[in-house]
Image (cartoon, helix red, strand yellow):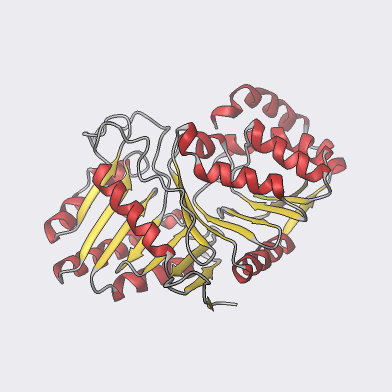
Length: 369
């Protein structure tokens, strides 16, 4: 299923359509095409951006569109884009009329302080003409092109929420007090909401939405994440759901792009397998961040299930209660599981001794991964 359109019940709400992209190549192609078709504005928010062959394609379109009178605003994270922020590429874009800002929480007035690895802007958004919106896990860089991603393009009333958040973030990015940057917790129209998350207890909207949905789950909780290092509250919610007879599944890569994070993830597996939570190892790098809970709740966006995302980063996601949207994400999860290896507790107990030792070493710091 590629394109779905469903009328909403709310008055004057714009019907929502969506399209999923399950490979990085397809998602990138769609994003580039959308940028090329922009008539009025391109708003681009990205955590990872490399000035390589792939990044150059985006930069060329941004320059071309800015020269043609289209408003182009780019918001990059200062730490993850450290090699890019001081490059000649940025100056060329600015000379062409592209507006660029670099998010840096530690010193909001400086693009040049890159010391704080926490409190990063991990969000990803592409908004075209304030009418269509892309989000998911895609990074812009050649090394990430082979990753298995889930990206979604949405059109409808929820795009207004995403645009408002981007506008607010753009205005406040260099202010001193940015921990409430662009936060949004309102329920959207037609079963779709754009929810953000910030590193303050009162602003962790995505986290609380996910926890509450798991606590209310009746039949299933299916989670895909590249890094699985849950905090105690999330872990307890998953275990209690499994005890209620809910089908809890975690899909993670066997090996991600961060070996120490993988070892940290492994420290949880013996425990959750003993609680009848099913674990699937995807044989390639899967970078999707999705959740399917029962038949009426789904999430796709930038939120990883690790402590840095859950506690310390700025995140965002589309949450939908639209049945067809949930069904489609359900189908994607099932296909991924067919390409994955389900881990048994017996098999896991037989893992190599050196791996067990590595887990013991990483255990004390896993809450900081």
